[in-house]
Image (cartoon, rainbow, N blue to C red; front, side, top):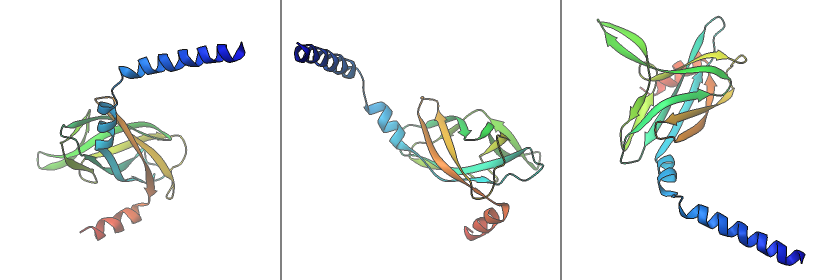
Length: 164
């Protein structure tokens, strides 16, 4: 009796899951996520007495369609905004942006003097040597994450000099 009941329950379970699985397409979700990647992520160490710090990274889009970045979160930080530096009236100024488009088959750098993240309201002091989870959210519902190392201003300046 128990074996027969177990067999009927198992049959019902596998039948339901196979029907549920038939209408679900893996292709769109998996390919899009694999097409977007994040690398070289780092956060500038929070300096005492400052209300914010910044985060930088490279985001690559290997898809044939543009990807629209609409939000970012950083573990242990209350608020994250996307910003860009622009030249206006002969001066460089920073402004918040609602979204950033990553062109098809390209890599976009979030770097000092360009696009970057502004981080506000840390839950605890963020110091050199920490590693924080950075999550990027896209308009199509996809998201990717990576770990961002916290670097001191001195480390950032020395690594910047080596790239030139």
